[in-house]
Picture 1 (cartoon, rainbow, N blue to C red):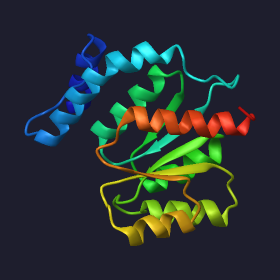
Picture 2: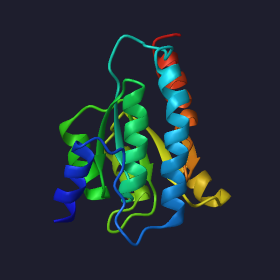
Picture 3: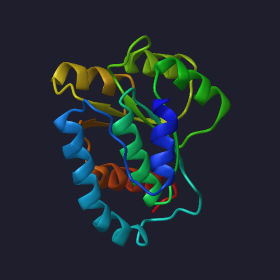
Picture 4: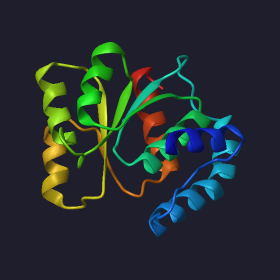
Length: 175
């Protein structure tokens, strides 16, 4: 199966596996991540460490983006959990304490906005950062009104995400 082939190739040491047909934008993202990774790895040892291993939930139906963000965050010592649908985010949040959520807005079924409304209704105290290809002000204002701490445009810059998370976690411990 596709998943068995992908897992086997990744287990042999490949960083990514793209099946055909693939989008050029995905290739550019992966290559950019690979180039940036050398800088990320060099700076990983200087990451602010508030004394705990922060756990980040990544909710995105794009497996390439989700995996690349997850790999980048793990390089900096974060724990990550990836889910591909809004419905799965409900289950993940019910079962695990997360320090932050990176949330796509446009997903089939339950959208990122639906997840944010649910978090608000359930009084889940977790910082949410939106990952979206939508760049309109109305959407950005809407998610900020629902409590989002930040809004990252896709394709995402992993170093910007990690710096933002470092700042958030440093503020929590008074750093």
